[in-house]
Image (cartoon, rainbow over the protein chains, first blue to last red):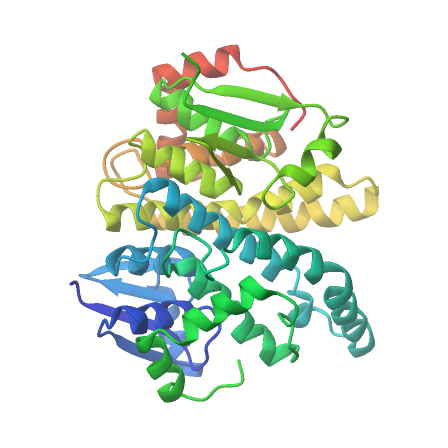
Length: 202
Length: 201
């Protein structure tokens, strides 16, 4: 197993997926959290001036999905065959598309417009997308094959984060998706991490 | 015998071209299924996530252009040798791909005033992205390691669109220019580009 050092801000954000995967795989890593001046000093030394950053055996990898995919491969949760890996990638890219539709949470300055956009997201954007995800998840609660992959963990991390910004039982009517969430949260490593992880609002 | 792969997209480059370039570079045959805009509404509900491109292989239908491209790259040996090299290639692809929706937004903008604003934003993003990529790029004439990988093809695809927008841009970035040239001069890619149908996007 290589040595891993994950650097991010003092929050879950775009690093939590990596942390969840490390937890699921029982992999030790250095969980570095920076802010303010410390970040400003570090920024020019990073590949793309962004976080999260994974240092593995002296190599720096940035881009949260590239990081997550690498960890998933190392812990055997990327998908068993190239085709399964592609199916996992497909789910994760679709989650990104959904996440992009939530960017207004950070870019919309007008509070009234923000509330309108939240309403539109919940009523018009989210349901048809969740309908599609529901069909892609199995009755056993896995997006790929019949065991936990990073696609399931990513789905969990997405709603874990989204609930912080738009609280609600968004998956109420979705049987398969609820199973996915249950499979992830009851993974022993993840269950332990969820209890022990530092508190943050996002 | 029918080709192993069936790629479905519109009759355009867009989000289908990365995979077409990957198959071309590897000299691998595939069914290049192009839909008209009229045919699309009937097909849409049969797709996994309501979008194109799609890749059908071994009875499975994949969607999401980068998931498809990454799978194709891996299948034809253009993904990278080790998990780490693959992650480095992924990193480049993720960074470069942030340009795509912004450039598409610019291309399709009808309002002249908004278009001028968007053009300015896109040009700034291009400089920011190319500067980052130049710093990270390998010096052997390829973005990662010492041979052509799918990230070079993905860069070439987007950089070609950038050259259409602002000719000569890539020449300001020596390492990126080398990767761009190496793709263009690759004999299989050169043959593919010579035969490729012209499409507006």
